[in-house]
Length: 298
Image: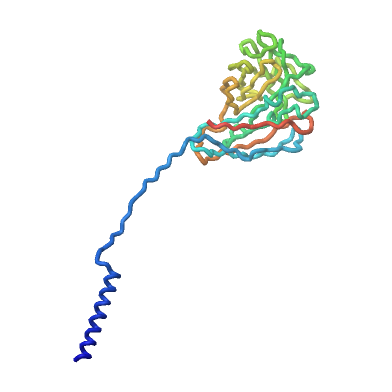
């Protein structure tokens, strides 16, 4: 009886220890899963920014009167706002300040004066950005001016062709700002080397005066080699500037100006333009003066 009691006691103690351990491992209270939330808000500040790549372009050993390479340039909206207008200007008028014709010095020419741009639609082909043309010091042989009191004459050099132009000045002698007192004409056909027709009383088209600032008057042409360009005459009557894509506010307003694009230009959008240079015959060999092309987004 005594042994049996000890055995039963041992079993009872073991059972009690087992229950104690289980009570530690399995608490009688129930723990429920739970969570909470944090609201995340971000406000992006207004950033107007575009990035143009590549940052530099170079044309080497271009033979005058021959085609040059075409380069693609990407304009990317790297800011945080939408743009609806892109335009371009090159500082030809700031770097080409002296008449380079007949000087034999390529550094007198601004590289940007040769620059032509084509947008993505390409319906107009390549168009000059800011092409400068200068007054010929001497009247070309056999030229018959029209108007007869013309004070300035020269050529529009469109790659392989040249077109003779002339204009008179305003009532203020030596100033070419008051277009209502002026007449600006250009030949509609290029000059032939063999039989140059320099009679400005026939085969010409007259420009339409639009507006002026204190430095430039601007003209447009409905036909001829300057059709749909903005053609600016400098106040000193010694040079003209031919532009297509330039909305620079220092220039008088012109109805023939065009934006590179007026499509919605949203962040991360890319607009690609093509650039080339038109080097006419008669440009001396060597390095011209570098120019800066500026792309503007509005």
